[in-house]
Length: 383
Image (cartoon, rainbow, N blue to C red; front, side, top):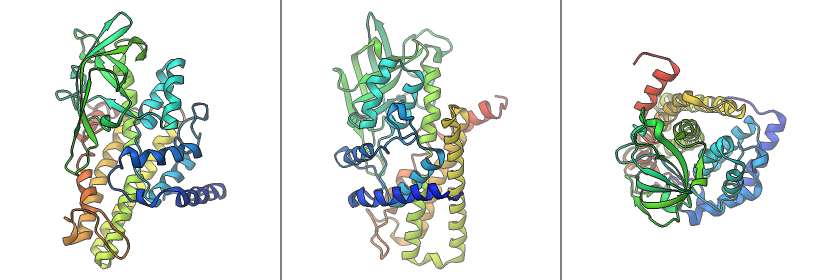
């Protein structure tokens, strides 16, 4: 922690800690991979009933309206208890975009179900030929009267096989120059005829991602967010929220605790050289928490995270990989174990966390792309 609680914040922390200890099922604690909906969504609903599912949302939309420090307290306490990773495409990505760009009718239709957890959202951005170069996407949406007809293919779509809705970038003007000028932002009901979803198993053994095929899918014109062909502007606003969301220090805090547990069990904690590396890692986690809190403060002040969010995305994702490598060092010869390692201090899943961290420098925009964004749009360096 990089700050000290005020008396009111300390009281709130104890309230959160006590409630989490009493209500988070033991089977969900310390999970390295995201549990399936059948296990995870009841916990989502519990947080929703408590009023804590969306600390960063304004109260008028069903959120908690928490202060910056209260949000930090919740992040730290969720990490301390080992809370699982929730499906956040609705909470952190499309939710804030709807608040900023959607019509009143669209907000009324989509925001309450996100808070309630009655729908799950996925993001339709990347395509087989348009990942880092998102402006080259080719999924077509042709406007025909009061509806669009969509044909194309999305890939690496998180939880698409569990989702009810997708927010997607689609090409509505194939002749537009520059290319991003002909892209629109659509909401797609995943239960529509013509949609095929195929899960993708990852190196970590989970099926977080899917590819999605659209074969003449009908989408009402009323599902357009913003203006026709103006999707790129909305997409960039959303990417700022996504990069901030994927940089949540909860995961780094949990990784740091896994390292400490493993190091005590293996005995390497007594090694002064390892202690130095662990101290450096702990300092970097504190730095990430400070960076994250500053970004949240800007967002709470109605300032878009903007291109500066790329800085925290780079730092957070590369830190998570470094923490995974330090956990492998702490585990020594036990690191390759297929599954959690039993120790006198509790079970620690080293290999899965290490493998999962390989992808964090790719999704949400690769580190190479993020560095280009920082160079061009933050530092104004020449091309």
